[in-house]
Image (cartoon, rainbow, N blue to C red; front, side, top):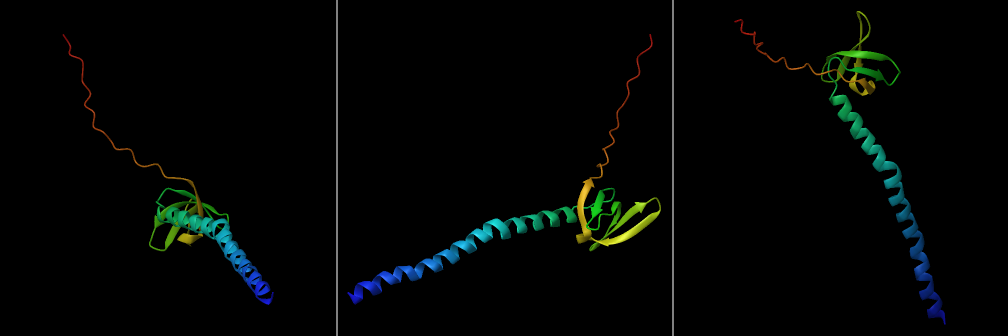
Length: 114
């Protein structure tokens, strides 16, 4: 009888460990993984900054990127007013700079006069 009671309690000791492991798995998929994805997307956006992009900083300042350096960007916040920010301070890109269109040399054919 004493042996039966001891063997039944062994399964009960494993349940809390499984619950804690399940909690960690749920936390990973609900909190940690999405946060890593957002951080990766932010790093890609910040590395793709180019002159002419209209951006918003984490402080809410709107400006246009004029110069991009290794760790900093120079933003024009008003005509003739430029401020320097760290790349991670850029929260989002409002409008990407339009890529310069490739100029094609087209030969215009003049009508033949008869």
